[in-house]
Length: 168
Image (tube, rainbow, N blue to C red; front, side, top):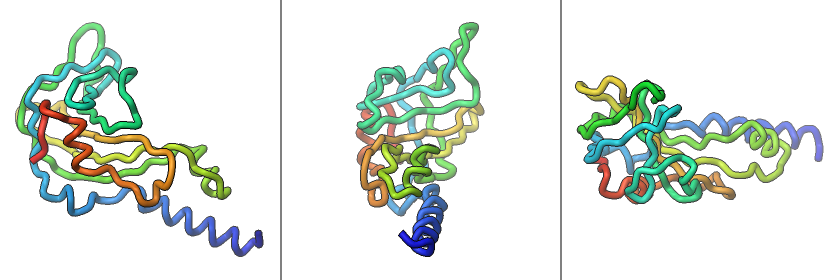
């Protein structure tokens, strides 16, 4: 491959990386509230509680190839005290669609190789007048191919949350 062609491929891939973290599409623009109907406990050593198919789960029990969500807080749960996210209606301040790629994946994609699995993510940045510990709701799933055309859908977010919570 010529030097010029390699340069063009590099520029194209770098430009693509800049758009991986963009504001979410119109499908999520109408979502203004996240209503948590059940208290969620934060696992010791973590600052998030995981939900998949409408059930709270430990991270080790998550099937990352299926949609799942995590409610994230500022405080890491420790042995000395449990952190619980209480049922509440949280304001969605901002929604971001992300497709992070790991370091090896970036290098391999620049070489023209298959970049391997990536996580498709939707971040709902949350706020509350009563719960200052809340940070965000992150919903995601892992995909292994053709990440240029895939996005996490709102239906997948609802599937992950089940009846535990809703986005309005």
